Image (cartoon, rainbow, N blue to C red):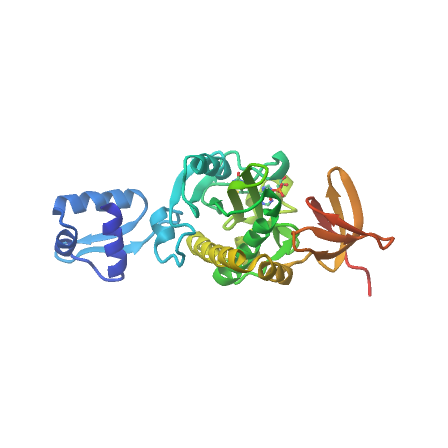
Amino acid sequence: MRDKILELLKQGQPEFVSGEAICQRLGVSRTAVWKHVQSLRSMGYDIEALTNAGYRLRGVPDRLYPEEITWGLKTSFMGRHVHYCERTDSTNRLARELAARGAPEGTLVVAEEQTGGRGRLGRGWFSPYGKGIWCSLILRPTLSPLDAPPLTMLAAVAVAEALQQAAGLLAGIKWPNDLLAGGRKLCGILTELDAEVERVNHLIVGIGLNVNIAPGEFPPELTNTATSVLAVTGRRASRVKLLQEMLAALEYWYLRWQKEGFSPVLSRWKEHSITLGRPVLVTSHRESYEGWAEDVDESGSLILRLPGGERLKIFSGEVSLRPLPEQ
Ligand code: BT5
């Protein structure tokens, strides 16, 4: 009922919606409407109440509430089920739990804050309250575990496009899936699989995007390596809008990937890439290689050309970009 009242107020915006009209539309008493309005106010919604005029929605809170995410969302399944929490250890951990209990494909788990946000290889992810998009998506593609890397790259493409659409920010993708702006990390993606040898049961795509973190708010160990939409553009961005664009782009590329395979995603990934055609240092399985990032193949592996001309195929690893040689 509360959601329905909110919907009526949104439809009525910027005008007042009379209490009478709400009662009639929803078949509830005036007292009930008033109680729900109070509850919405306690969630941070700014609702004006005026005798004889009714209620008017003046502002929505800066929260990733399911009601906000799904309002005007242009997807058919991605993000249609939202599991919201103010605080959790890790949305990836929670998404895994929900997936094991049968949550449908496209379910989104989102938190205002993560107390134990995870990166790859047991590293941590800084996820302060209300300042970023810390979320995980549950996907259930028919897929062998070996074919999963392209999905992470697909997610990187979707985030890059959402940043462009919703914040006018051009971010570059560093292989395999970091998004960088001005040489600093803006977004990280962590894909986790629940799989048998031959078949993926489900896949969790975790996305951490720094949105409204001011430069001085990063912990000392990240001040020189991390950035946010606010730090790059000088403006606070709407997290809801960014997330909606991200979900729309994810659905678009996910469906294309299912119909046409990895090729179209890969070409778009290459357009956003800042890794290819330059010298890099790659660390993979405790070995380091200096070379030229030549290409990414159809499996998502990085093709590195070593100084002796030999080509090395890297399945997973860490890339540091090296300066381009002087012309
Ligand atoms: C990643 O790992 O980049 C994947 C990060 C995925 C985070 C999301 S948030 C929602 C979901 N739930 C989770 O628990 N995780 C996912 P990796 O490439 O290993 O990078 C981790 C490294 O990035 C850390 O060791 C730090 O150096 C750095 N780092 C940590 N927090 C950062 C931040 N907010 N912004 C930029 N860099 C950060």
